Length: 147
Ligand code: BTN
Image 1 (cartoon, helix red, strand yellow):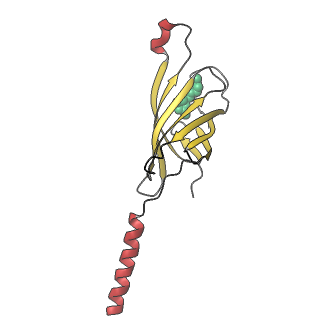
Image 2 (cartoon, helix red, strand yellow; image 1 turned 90 degrees about the vertical axis):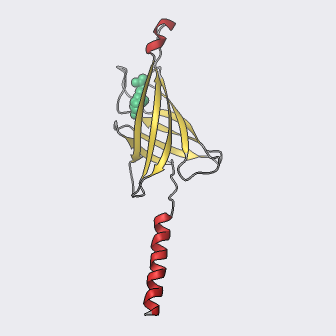
Image 3 (tube, rainbow, N blue to C red; image 1 turned 60 degrees about the vertical axis):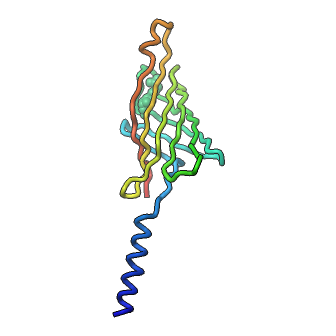
C-alpha cells in the first residue's frame, strides 16, 4: 500500500514536471507561412544575429520570384523561452524591401509558431507617390519539417 502510494506520488510529480517544462523556441530551421512562403534561418551567432533565405509564394510585382536573402536579430536580453525577433528581406527580384517583427511561441502541443507583422516598402517614382508605397500585414510561420 505504502509502495503503491509512493509510486503514484513519484509518477504524478514526473508528469507534472514534464507538463510544466518550457520548451525553448528555436528560430533556426525551415519555416512555411500562411501564404505558402518558405524561409530558412541557417545560422545564428552568440549575439543573436542570423541570416538565411526567403522564398516568397506571392509578389506585388510582375517579376519572376527568386529566392532572396534575409538578415535578422533575435532579442537575447534575459534569454526568454519565447523570444522576440526581427528580420529584413532584401528582395533580389524587385526594388522593394520587407521588414518582419515577431515572437516565437511554443503552443499547447509543444509546436513552435512564429507570429509576425511585416511592412513591405515598394519603390515609387517620386515623393508624391510616397503615400501608397507601404503595405502592412501579418504572417504565421510553422516548421516545414517538424518531428
Ligand atoms: C515584392 O512583391 O516586391 C517582393 C515580394 C514581397 C512578398 C511579401 S513580403 C510580406 C508577405 N509575406 C510573404 O511571405 N510574402 C509577402
